[in-house]
Image (tube, rainbow, N blue to C red):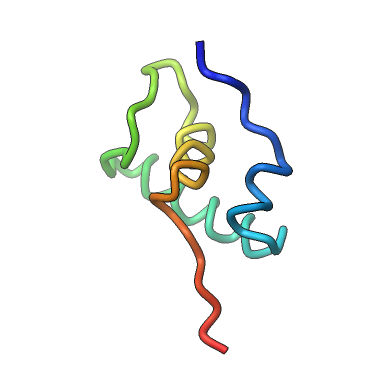
Length: 66
């Protein structure tokens, strides 16, 4: 069984909670529209849980252009 994903772990990858929400929402919409998950997930996982796993695994990230 995989360990649960915590909010603190997500903030280590994307430190701004607002950007984390935007990035996660956009990717969840892509998955809902039929995009292939970038990491191995269970069939019962929700789109948002798949996004969280992708962020933790480093498949999805945010870089500041400034």
